[in-house]
Length: 222
Image 1 (cartoon, helix red, strand yellow):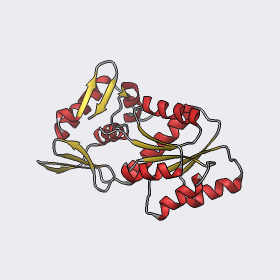
Image 2 (cartoon, one colour; image 1 turned 180 degrees about the horizontal axis):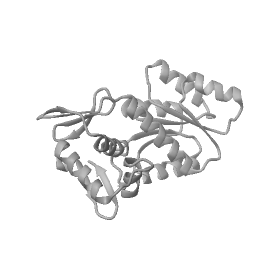
Image 3 (cartoon, one colour; image 1 turned 120 degrees about the horizontal axis):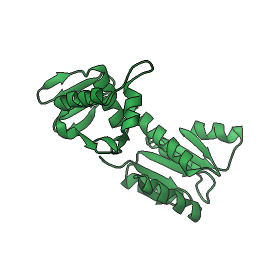
Image 4 (cartoon, one colour; image 1 turned 30 degrees about the vertical axis):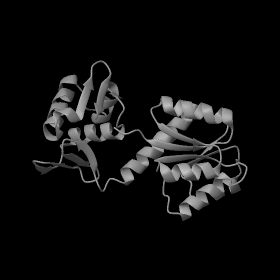
């Protein structure tokens, strides 16, 4: 699976390096810029999945940068990382087109949670063209439709929930415990045997190589 690409615009060298290294450790591809001009060039050359933007910078500030990008038709989700905390600043940020705010100082764990949430939200808002699973299989989440060279069909509820969970976390290993929690609701009795059955059924439909089992770790969609 391709890594999600993030544009990081932050002019504080120390914070820039800390955030960039942490996101890269979390398996994101990060393009770092220290000013708006460099950020615009990077965004033009490398269309990204998310933007992390500092607000208070010399030259064009974060508000102005995002406003200009929105006027240019860039719809990439954006999170402002800023020390500004007034309601007026908050309103201005959303008015120019941001999707979320993260106030300094912040925990890196919170940053990653916000990044993951926004990427997932964008991912499931753009599913009309389907998700290519490889081997000729395409998954349309909104309509629960699988298209393969053999034809089209919908998935049974548990198989659908399993595949949706895996593509939601594409490229990452989903722990077995997480899979069990998601597939079985309160009052149902989960079992390893049932999970193996649903996984076997899913592989019959989309191809065995689409989902890999990592012993002792969990499942991952390729």
